[in-house]
Length: 612
Ligand SMILES: Nc1ncnc2c1ncn2[C@@H]1O[C@H](COP(=O)(O)OP(=O)(O)OP(=O)(O)O)[C@@H](O)[C@H]1O
Image 1: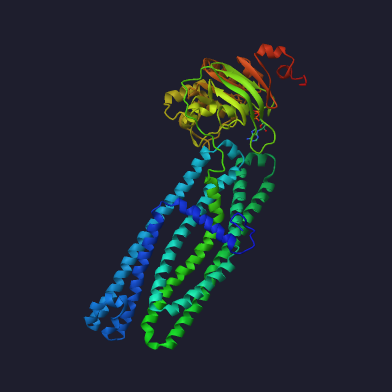
Image 2 (image 1 turned 90 degrees about the vertical axis):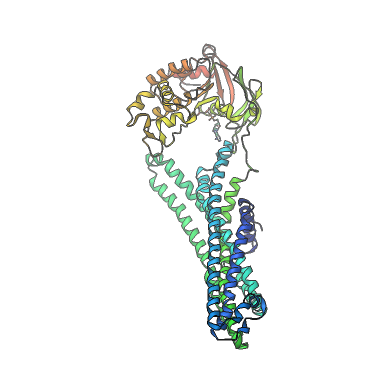
């Protein structure tokens, strides 16, 4: 019966464990001084409020024209002893002034505590969000691959808010606990017998409330799952809009979205329904208790009216605080799923990271060597690379070819250290790639990958994305080299035209040219082109190939292409098949061999021939 087992048979223990766990997680988020400060201010403000309420005893006595010795006895009597010598009107005014004074001081402290509360909450919510983004940016791709983007977005956008709400509830819970503590002491001082009756009744009330709301934690977890489902639907709806329309699946997607949205609606409705029960249950039972106490005391001793009024006032102030403890507990139970979701994403123990090494190299001197390298994507049964040994020589152009799914992109992914190999070794000259400083190594690489992403920014900003210090002249030079300058000049605001999300759309070929410019402007030592020109027309590709021939001179270039015309000028061609190296050599050698490359080459030059 733990927080991880929502089907726990007891209505309490599972919820309590979940809340206990979320409390521990929440406490970790606060600075050390925060919780004692909140508690101290809470206790102070309620002590002052308690003093103000206690002053009603002499006030009522004064109103009743009771003799001044009514002020004698007890702590309060000692504090107010000087008042005993005043005449009745002056005493009344002085007590009224005291009560007003305590109200002002109490509210100033309460305001200060509310400010502290708001300060801490806003900072912690911000810290949660930024920690999640930092975590996502440092996690290995392998981990991200296994998660749905919609679910991660949900954790970042929705569950952090709900966790922030839980933090707020937790803080208020502390304040309410301090109120209940202070008021309870005051009640004990006034009458321990009546206080005992109240304590027993409160325990019964909270037991009844907890029974009535026992399903909240389970529903809270369901709500997180429902939110994730809806976020996934939204993500796929935006991302796959064209596919949905092209394949006429609007009705299907509408239905799927409605199901997910209905799930969220129903879960939250049930959650709110159950949470809303706390208040009425508390109120009915508490009024019952209060009435019982007043009637009992008045019937027993009618002269105790001033004390009884003070007792009732304190109880009246204590009651909403006690009730709040109940509902804050329910709110924490409901948010336990969200807190766990957020903390689970922030937890570093169960996740894989690409760790940076410390070695920096001046430049790539000899080669990037693969030594018997194998790699399997997480969650996949088959190996994407299997015992690959290969040298990518410095300063030369190596082409990777092979059927779809052969492992070409995977090889490049390992060079960029988006993933680490499962077995074997990748070396950069004499260093293990994992020993190299990650930023330094990636900083030497310019890559144009298959999935080109343009940010919601201007053309110039998108080109300079990896080289923020580049000036306009450098941006334009890179664009000219990538044959992008002419089309950029025709855009409404040239290089200042906004593209990407919220900007104008570009064709596949235009995006590819911008991606090329983005890689070129980094002046990379190693240039990786993964199907970087496949969306271009032949003329444009020809132009770019000439430009890249010039640009690539003395650089290490890795080209992946299905169009064999793109790789004809490579110094060396490596043919991959089923994650293994099938052949390698220069163009003449491979064409002369009656192997896989030969068949691919013949097919592209004589399309009527069959491949195998
Ligand atoms: N993120 C991933 N998660 C799981 N499996 C993957 C992932 N990416 C690729 N694979 C699998 O790894 C294998 C090699 O894929 P890879 O992308 O390296 O092939 P490729 O030769 O570049 O193919 P293409 O020419 O179609 O781009 C394929 O079987 C593919 O399904």
